[in-house]
Image (tube, rainbow, N blue to C red; front, side, top):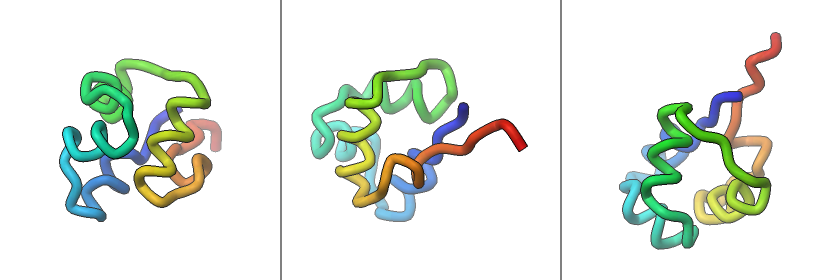
Amino acid sequence: MRYRIKECREELKMSQVELAEKSKVSRTIISGLESGAITVTTDTLLKIAKALNKKVSEIFFDDIV
């Protein structure tokens, strides 16, 4: 699964640090999600989606086509 967090964050002209502060999720986790290096819990995705004013379904790509 790939996430659209970086695209959504950049649309809002928000840095990783700003998103981390707003979502209360560490910048390291946000960086890992953006690079595809890690996966996280639904709770973490909910926090990030809320900080980006998006639904969870709007911040990820499903690799299955």
